[in-house]
Image 1: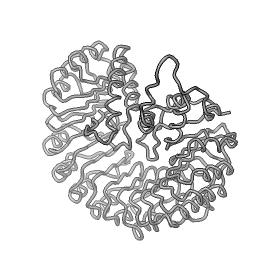
Image 2 (image 1 turned 180 degrees about the vertical axis):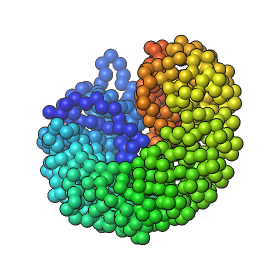
Image 3 (image 1 turned 90 degrees about the horizontal axis):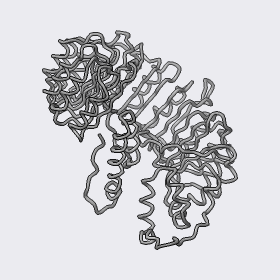
Length: 567
């Protein structure tokens, strides 16, 4: 049948997110339990709870715990089924006979994920059509590895589920006809994501807008052979604000030029590992409302293209450039960006070699700059650091291979793979970075002496990560926890690994979670502390579970308590 699943809940930071959902893996879990409503030996106090409160409690459980709770009694079984809005199924072919009973129980599902691994045979058109008949109110659908579904099945599915707002498919074999069907029938569609769709090839028909043109806001294409066939969609959907094209084959200059001529409403554009040159950037430059631009590993882009974007897109707030060490983007482009994009708040330069001249222009003109990452650059020295310290007065997050201790508003700092960072530099940080909240030290020649200085400095420090620093012992980590009980200390003395030069060591950029993530917080903190011994692990779990009840009561409308931001 379906193999037992113990998968964790799907992360809410993804674009197509599903809260703790049932991964149905056995037919026995579908059948109604025969447990008596009465509880032997005492009164069942859960009968005092309304169904709505019981459903709210279920929402805080993981997939496995929720399935087990649904088997406690008939009432819990019914409440769980009626209030389950998100469902994730192992979409293997033998699920077909059980689809009616599944969706008779889960009759309120609006968000559905169908996944099948590579070694199994996926559901066919018959199962998909039957699901669409049972769940006509679906608003989000994610298909992964459903290789037996064809264009015919997708067309009927789209006709039955016209309320779709988010659609994502990956590693499937249907093609352009299926995509056109979704865009023609789903008039409320807002987010559209296509990844590794082998049915779209060089001979595929063009994919237009349909009725979705009036609502579509975001599109994402990944690893497509002929993603250029979506050109009519990109030009015709006038409400599109976000475009992400990642690792797609073929020349994209012509598509981007036509976007600039026919649809200039884009606010965010992400281009990664594409065949795109300055011609494509000149097309993007016509989107005058552009605020976020990511150019990652596009070696044909040069200073000329960047200058064209900067001169026309003056509302730019976030700029990420990974030049792949091609030395085609440098001071010339940065100076124009600094002079034209005065609202710049976040600048990430990877594989770019700016000098003090380019950084001085950025620091002097971009007074709103809050985040700066300079990774994989061989030109960053004392002059550049001094320039940043003197002029980037609004800087809150800094990631580079050396430290500027005069940025008194600095809240996050990552020191990665720098041979010049020692105990003296850590002591300087402890003494002067009074606003620092998160600190990551990775692959630096520091010792216990440097870590000791953090016990007395950085009064706002909430979290510190020490990785691959062989001079730091585990004993000093325990000592630091004793001196500052509120400080989260993650310590790892493993072998030095290759540094990727990104800013993830101090935490990913904040994103608004769709729902509270109590279970996720427990998992994250437990995993992060796995190397700190059983005592710290027990303490972390206790603190996490202690916060479960307050988190639950924050969901009630009469409470005014605000949930604290995750560290």
